[in-house]
Image (cartoon, rainbow, N blue to C red; front, side, top):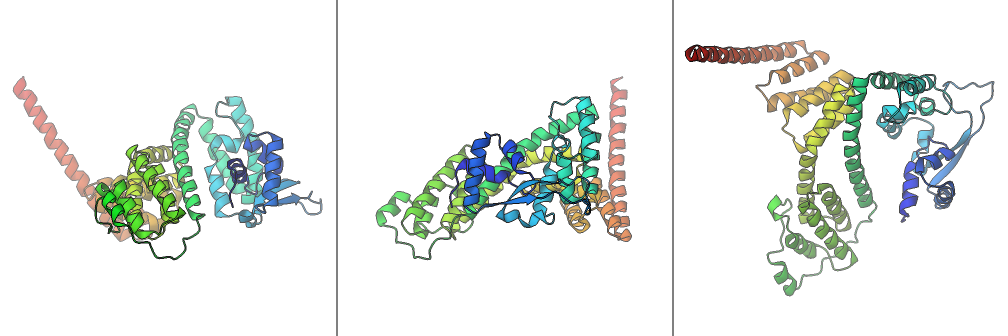
Length: 417
């Protein structure tokens, strides 16, 4: 089933939370166009309409922020989320900016912040906070509202948060592009099981070398002629192979331009069109690693901002993304452990990352201290004591080296005088 880009965009706005008229507002298109698209999506069976009738006085709502009436739209996939909060809704809630949660613009003033905080805290009807509280509970939403207010009311913290949003905007665009590429690849039906047609000798000569391809390609073998040759050996002639060849050539161009996201998406789609081709799988693995390495500095900056803002769960996720490109980075592994400790979640995962940090940087006292804190949190004080002893020993050696350097400098100054 193919969708017009505007149809797909409107469909992506539907989450089972926003009401019908809010969908129109969120799309940024004129109301007639959105209405027409919604009718078309309904006819295709992709969305359902749900009418919330007014609640009776005999059955008051448990959540004060719940809407009394309205028409909600939901895709087939999130019908169940109307009844119970799911991971998708929680992820959307966590992804809201402080401005969005309080119903503010990014250039709002002090009085607007105060008013937005009051409306969100009281779960005033019609606010996003009220709608989220109706689905996720008032306590979770009000805690997040309070945290947002504490940041935005302080000029210094707000400035740091605005800088963080710039990093997040960049990384979100990258992640959205990757997600869209994965979605497109998942929609490709598997190829029919047919044997490959033997490649003519003339084509072999044009390709230039033996067509047998190893499963994992080294970076220098990511050459167009080699991948096309391996593809022609693996796949039978036809529209699928022609499409895959075009994607391979596109991936090579994108890689040369250092657009690793575009190259990854092109190779992922080629692997879906022509499955189980060792050369293409190896090329995808190589380009994916290059992409993760190129994105690591951006994710590192984002993680540091999230740490400074106390956004511990977000920081843990972002440090994990740094590790995708730099798996031996002790600072990133320690960042995951410290963020999970601060959030009080997934302590076993925090221990694994802290142990990885110590293994990658055995002379770093901070890594040993973090591991000790994790051991304390997991209830193993003897292990924590050993880690602290190592940290103190390393710190003592560092202080001794600093003292030795200071004595050398003083002796040099005496000779000069």
